[in-house]
Amino acid sequence: MERLIWFLLAGTRGGANRARILAALRDRPRNANQLAEGLGLNYRTVLHHVRLLLEHGLITTPAQDAYGAVYFLTSQMEKNIELLDRILRNGR
Image (cartoon, one colour):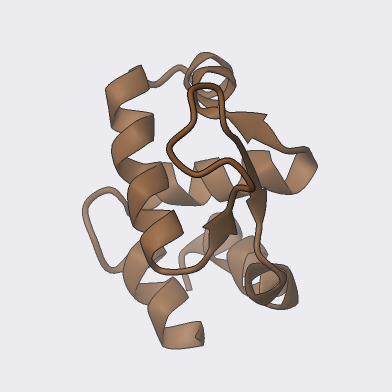
C-alpha cells in the first residue's frame, strides 16, 4: 500500500492534486463540487483524480456514479495517514 500511495501522490504529475484531495477528505467527507471549490480546481480535474483514487482503493463512496456522491477515505488510507502527512510536508 505504501508504494501505491507514493506512486499516486509523489511519483506522477497529478500527485500534488491527489494529495490535496486526500487531505481535504481527511478533514471531512465531500463531493466533487465541494472539492473543486475548496481546492480551487476545475470540476473535471477533480473527477479525474477522484476516479483514480477510487480505482486504487484510497477513497470510497456509498453512492458510486451518483450525482453529488460524497467521498470518504478508505480504512486502508486512514491507516497510512502518516505517510500522506509526510508527503504533504516535504515530499519524502
